[in-house]
Length: 138
Length: 326
Image (cartoon, rainbow over all chains, first blue to last red; front, top):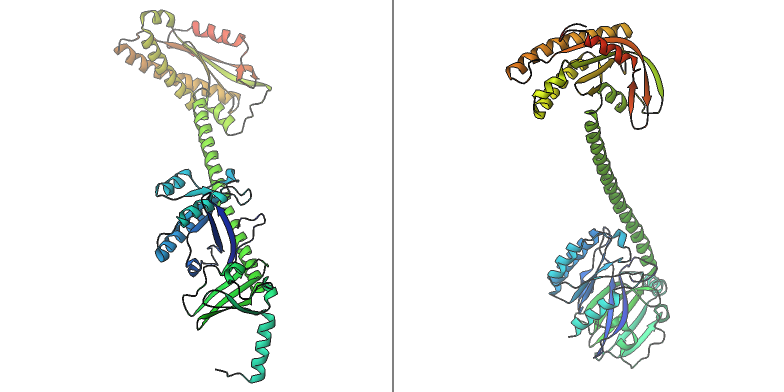
């Protein structure tokens, strides 16, 4: 999903990522799952055994945040409280940004770790995985 | 189980093996790779080593082994080779078979459809956004329009209604031009106004003038007269622009107006006297046809009446008794 040429994810793409937390090295196996839209629904069994997850919404499209919130509810219902972060993608398109600071602040008040990110510049992505690695491995 | 004729079953096996690029990994309970064969190169797995831990060689199996049930299926997994495979896990005693079936073509078709759907969604959202922007622009336009209406309403208090109407309806252009026209000019003032004002408080004078001009203007408008200006206690109006019924009819309308003004002033005098405000208010009028020039600038449009005309009228007014002749 964080590639320069954006291609819709179909099924699952599995990648390996090593995160250096200074006191320890954490190896992450990342399952990039197809998101949810009109013709595709998330296959919940793909989350089985996950140590944590990253929700990605498009900051220029509020409807995608609604989908992310609903996915979070369903994951929590099926697998209990897992560490997760919410990335608000397309942070480089500030002039088209459509998610209010208030909405973000409300989620943060609930203890959510919310991070603006950009697939184009890579902003926020490393920080998100690092945070997730800390919480998933502690 | 085998219900297909032997030769057909064999053909199907061949088709599946070749078309779906079947490959397998055989893993023992210690997660060591015991065996591997089939189209391994299709999945970038040609270099796997038997007898070594499988997860270190095939990292996407991390977390999937050991199996929690007898069989498990993960559809459409994209591998480093770029190919997509369905992963079938099958428990066999203490060992597990991992079967890979190529689904790249199906994945590509699904992706193409997904991309189209995604583009469609984006277009729909764009349309919604554009509509919202359009509505917002419309609201701004309405607000600007309301503002203009407010301003023009305010301006209307400073313009004769006929002139206001002819300008704001677009009938008359506020352009710089000169025009000569036959008008019937009407001039009135209050007899002995200066002496009267010396006896009154400024508020009383304002009250009297406001009431007087309001009443007289209403009558002027009723008869089709254009109220040109108020100068002190004087009222100048004319007939013939922007609406005219012809010179004769305009003059007649002016006379009718003057008559009504006279009657109304008599009533006002009674009222003012009883209020003790002014016992000597009186007016006289005269009218004359005159040629006038409309001198128009970007800032102001006004009829300029040749000086001889007001002087003539004024003399006529002075020579009349209060509240009397035309």
